[in-house]
Length: 214
Figure 1 (cartoon, rainbow, N blue to C red):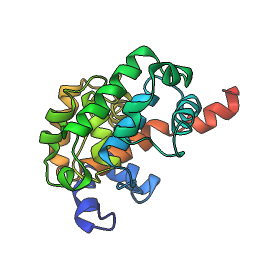
Figure 2: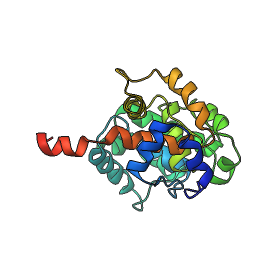
Figure 3: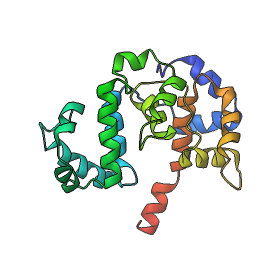
Figure 4: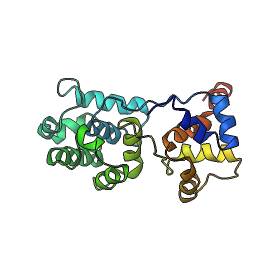
């Protein structure tokens, strides 16, 4: 994603409330291409589901320590016993999901980085949501943060919807379908739109946390 692309800012700033928010927040700092393979990104995503960041990192660290300290390859993961993985803190459901991810990577269902770059967003979503423990939102995070796709708006993300609610001064967050329709006019820069909506959803939280001690 080229963040200094003037067309990106021209497209987003066509909307006056969003233009004002962009002026306040500053340039988009979204960086995709996190250096992970699709398998590695999905592995981390499954481990982290429904957990706070520190807890997820602790479990991931214990799994990585079973090998060379890195995310285990699908082939290495297949050799780990259920007992050793459960001892790392994995639930039974996540263990099954990771087993399925490893098998799907070995069989080619999960693409390698080169193949992934040649598949469309919709094709990747359709392929990967067939895996246990992988939903559309998880694939959308892969698209934005690992594959650097520039036109993804995760409308099921609560923070994205909260950001739009704040942007528009709504009483309630929009329904996903409504937000998807609203977002069409920001194509092909909807990943940058998502970044600004995430920032909008966070505004004021730091101050509130300091005042409340949360």
